[in-house]
Length: 413
Ligand SMILES: *Cc1c(COP(=O)(O)O)cnc(C)c1O
Image (cartoon, rainbow, N blue to C red; front, side, top):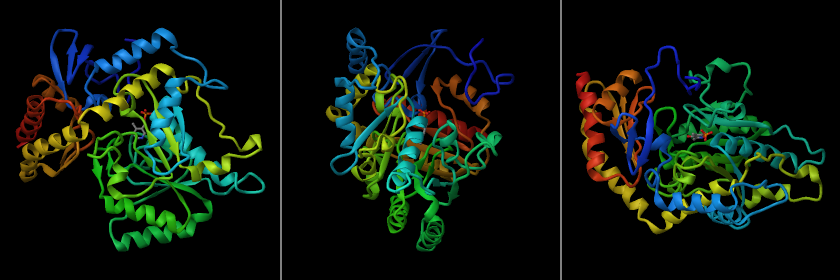
């Protein structure tokens, strides 16, 4: 095999499964077996796999304009998508920057935040180029985004010394910790461009949750010291936590919003960085240098935009948030009793995320084998066995997933 696999010690890893087709919540393997997928391909398949409306949009777009550069040229799929994504932030005059992946959406957010301050100074330079991030954060694998991830997380510890140094903090959850966070921000605000948070659920580091109240505290402190707030909803956006966007549960307003993963409903890579009119304002100037210096080659790819427009149509026409609510109820009912198990630290369900945190790290290879033998596809992270299925999953398929998780935990006893 010439293929270099992600996050994988290929010398010791078991042979990857070969998938030949997908439909709904099912993956079909090359030997004919079918697995019920409980994690929706890194949480992207919100409408299930191979949704016919998305497939049709891709086919139609590929037949007339698969790609064209976005420099000096626009096209309807990108114009329409930008108009629709702009509405995901409150207020008028929001601007939408398209890119190929969530990591790049975060890089672009960082550049926007820093240059927002630089453009307001007479010299065009600023000392405000540092970022406040949070423990257990994950914002992507490119080097700027990596600098915002949890500093001790093993995924990125090989690169210490190479990365920019940022300011990882604990998420405030009380008046006391908010005051601490406030003191820190006050002491560093002259070098701070923005704070960045994955709202309500830090999914990639193993489903770490915080409350809407914590999010409101972070917003309040940023406001008090005029620091921008970037909300990274690459994982939580598009319904995953029970509302279209997780930030809405805290009734706050982000300055910059990053979306990705679910944006094209598990079809083509695409992400977006959505900036408020306030963030954009200093870029709107006569000086060319004040423009945003970024432009991925395949930016705003028409096929990807057509897929995203079809996915947004589905969110508008289908009862996705109600489906998320019933998934939450079913998972809660079946998984909550596991909290009594001696090996379990805690069980939390939020929207279409159901997480069982064990007291010890999970042996992912052994767990995966256990699950595949039971006809389900799950991939625990660190100490957490979790479900994050398609919103369209059938109730009996979800039962099968929950039973597998319960069986796995009980087999440990
Ligand atoms: C997955 C993820 C990213 C990175 O997205 P890619 O498309 O993998 O580059 C960034 N932020 C969060 C919160 C994510 O979950």
